[in-house]
Image 1 (spheres, rainbow, N blue to C red):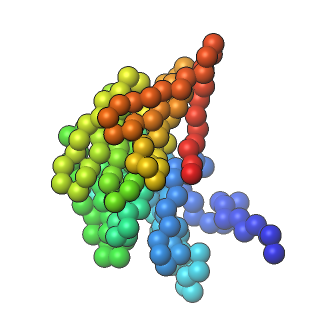
Image 2: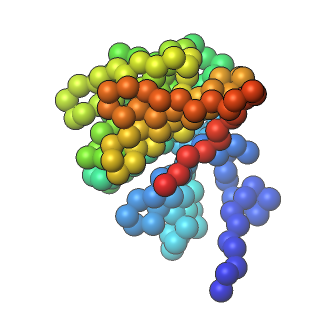
Length: 199
């Protein structure tokens, strides 16, 4: 019909924050999103309205901080969660098995900022206060350093390139890791701020 369906606090839905950070979709139609208020599970088609919304917070889950900065779903139905805040020195990475509800704390050796799942379920994180990304290949984490202080909006294309946005205040442009080196496209004569990447 082309009609939009809106879920908002204005309509009485328990969305914990004005600022949503990332969306992930389970095979059963469940929608997951992060926010400054935690990790929210939304089942739009749940027959029981009481089962429609649930938010994980530090009070009812292993999350350390209230803010969930980024999420990503792998092919096994695991949700990867960056529990990070710009206002807090430490950050954390978790994996949630959405079928069983089991949480796992992931030690990356770094301070994760954002998370993405790429080809072959490789997991990528950007890190607080250092440039580049770390890649989990299923066995170990590998650091791919770069010049900018921090990167955001991670995404891997079909050719294996990892794309990212520079998160510096002055705008650090668009970045690409091709598996061996970084390439950067800054705006000439000014700054460019990339707020999203898609394919």
